[in-house]
Every structure is written in C-alpha cells, then in structure tokens.
Length: 389
Image (cartoon, rainbow, N blue to C red; front, top):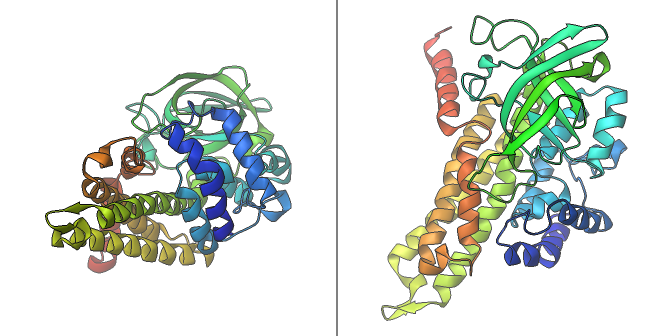
C-alpha cells in the first residue's frame, strides 16, 4: 500500500500541488478533493485506516505509518487518501465510540469521502485551548435533547464540513475542581439551525481544506440520539482520538520533511562551489547527517507509541513524547533543508519553502510543545518522587 501510495502521490498529486504552491483552495478546493479521492478509491487506497465494515482497509497504527508517510510526501496527499486531519481522527473516534445508528449516518459517509467533518473544541480566551478544563461552550438539557450555545475558533476544516463533533460543558464550572470533567461530545449537522461558520482565521498554512474557522452555536438543538459517547464523559472519550491523531500527524509530517530533505540533498550533491560539490563540505555533511538522525529518531518514537496504542494502551506519555520530539525535529529537518538550498530554499521553484510554511504550526496544533513538556514532567515527578499532586 505504501508503494501504491507513493506512485499515486507522485503521478496525480504532486503536479497539482506544485502548480498552486500548496494552496488547496486555489487548486480547486472541494472539487479537487473529490477528484483525487476518486483516483485513490480506484487504486484501492481510500481510507486505509477506516473500518472494513464501512469501506476502509482497517490498518492498525503501526501499519498506517509507512502509508501515511508516503501520502504526506505531498501536502495534498493525505486529502487524496481521506487521511487528512480532522477527518482521519474523527473516523478513528467514531469507529470506537459511535452507536450503530451513528455509524450509518456519520461514519460510513465520512469513510467513503461523501462528506467532511470537523472537531469543535478550541475556544477564544478565556475558554478552552491547551487547558480543556476552561471549556465554556454549554449544552443544556431540554425535552428530547440538548441546546448547544458557545463560541469556537481555530476549527480545522469547518468551512464545507458536513457535520461537527462539538465538545460542550454539560456540568461543572470552567477551571474549577473537576473542571476537565462534565463535558460531552455532541454530533451536529452543518445545516442545523443556529450553527454558523463566522469566518476563516488567516494562518500561515494554506493546505488544509476548509481552513481554520471561527464558529458560533446559538440554541443549536442536538437530539439525545446524537450524543457521542456518555454524557459528562466527553474528555474520557476524547482520549480515544487524541493519542492516535497526534501520531498520524507525525506520520504525515515525516513524509513532508523527508521530501524537503531529499530535495536538499540532491541540490547540494549537484551544486559546485568553493572548488567542489557542496555535499562534500563538512558543514553540509553535518546538516545532512543531523536530518537523517532526526528522521530516524522520529520514526522510532512514533512506532514505539503506535505499538502501545495497537496493544490497547492509552499511550498518553509515549504519544506526548513522540509528538513533541517530532514537531521540533521535523521543523529542524525542513529548516536545514531550506538553508542547504540557499536562495532556492525560499523560492517557489522548490517545494521546501512551502513545506516550511505548512509544518511550522505543527508545534502548536494538537497541543503546544510546552504543554506536552509540562505533562511529561508531571508524570516523571509522580513516578520518580512519589508526588501525588
């Protein structure tokens, strides 16, 4: 599957991405998605992680890694295989949590690429961001369901999504004792009255279909049948999504960083200066070697976390470690590649500049590195010092 993905990406995806410098809306947006996914489906590559009963290939976490990396070699590659964020993570979540009815109404069309989705969690200050206990959006119980009210932003893929998984407070108070509890995940169709995509928030990255949007929910009615998982157990169920989604981000961005590295190595191997090839200079060799080390270490940490997930573990610590290391290591890889390519490294003539543009937010998305370090350190203190706080 990795070999077939490599062929599809290079033949069908790269020419379009290069022409439009990785700007998905300029390249065709939703029309492009459907065209590329039709080609992936014909090649037997659509939704490789999706459950088999819904038309996917059912790959586990370890088996996903090489396929997702090959897809990530192109910025549009994950979209072509229907493994783009947030749909990929939402497929994983729905597969593990959704009822039989929810699987038919929401999961099956998502796996088939008939619709897109978004996960609505992040809020403007003082609401939930890296600290989920600050959740302000509320769902109030009414006859037959819930009324949803709140303000969200940085909701990836919101524009054009067919439905949303919305995290809302159903008990407790923001930031208080037990503030991280009392949340519920609700399924809301995009055409539900009171649901509004307000605007695209301008960000440096341009390859994510549907943008990163601000949203408002005003008395949106969600029937009881569209509660995803248990009431007041939203954060517990969200853990089903978080660890795997962090790792699939690592898989995709490893592919992109590897492409930048390969382009840079070929460039310095063919460029003559200072009496010889650039690739024969010690400074260039150090950058090449450091890139190889960062890529290898990223894959090693990724696979260790994926094995733990495949074995049924939560893998909270191993996914935090892998995500934090990868976000920074892959950024280093692309930054060195930029430097190795000189002026071409910041031009549109090579893909390196756009990969650098797109990969920088990875150190913030899915939890900033600093928050992951805080969590890792707290676990270490509890484990090594017996500190129960």
